[in-house]
Length: 503
Image 1: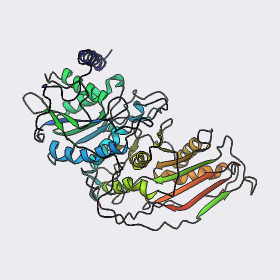
Image 2: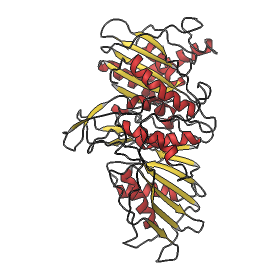
Image 3: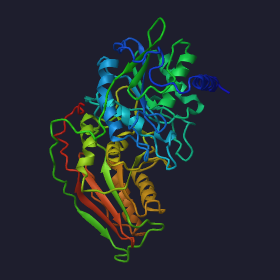
């Protein structure tokens, strides 16, 4: 047994023992006051500041924040995340830029018998990420620096800590590792210890359910011998905890209460009003494949009575190749408006995206860090799922992109997943995806109807500047396929503000 595993077990025993004696503790438990004291001031920029933001789950939540049927945030829970972000930025960080953001790996905490991934942590911290900035290159040679209105969210698996049934990454991304609900192999402690030992001052923000947050606070306090008094009972979703470690002297624990009181309605975007846009003209506008015509045959194992609506992730490339695999501030306007923009245009009964804990390879950084967690597609469609209280899932059983697979191969895998095997027969599904893969997915589906034909019909090219299109793929009860490329969300990218909306 290695030292990390020993420390993890010790921390678990300490946590479990104290939790037994403190069973039923709630709220602010440290001082016995009926109301918490005034919030402390912002954390010192010269310290290493470990900041813990609690996301709700089915077991620990502020009443009304989590949907009992989907395990996802409710409208109220989404509103809370939007209101917490400026409090965190101003009162905890003192308007300083964040140094790192770490969120729960959703597939490590699947909830209910339907095994819904826990997306609440990533969505809880997304608005805050968009209030911070990062400077990256916007070309492939390391030049043309651009500062984007977002910060990456790290949520990638550590090797050897991947849940059963989830694709094991071919390689690790230690610099974009997220939080593991089950803390397999002590990977959460390894992450925290690495930050402390690196000795780089700044603000490191962690978003996870109370179970994970409580363990992180307790184990960090125990392993680092800080002699703090972290709380044990669930305090509610408005509380933020910070362990602040100065260059010399003892660490301290600061506890903040945002006091936000979110409404239970879906957020209304502030001014300016979004400007509508005409749909892109695609050639061809649609493709129809009729079984028995021109050699078309039903693919083996094909689903029937199925409709998929593909949308691209929100705005993520404000200049050239600039990207950290999170959408930028402008994209938050689109993501939050998606329930309004898609009204009457789509009618899904479930929502899907790719697993955010599979890392994506980037080429546009200036610091040598070229790996990022790919959160943009999933966070783009999550507000739609929240607004409509729809089941929300992640594709995680195979790797979505690797250095050794071509776009055509990736497209074939995704096409097989969604259009064969019967899982989606009779379903209408909204899918958030990366635009580079949508075209190969559709082409793989079209080619499956024409085995042996070297020139099957192909879809139009999805433009790199097009964030607005909706591609609708419909398979009827007889297996006939229609691919419609004419729909769009109707939101003008060019008119979106660069900074995220303020709430």
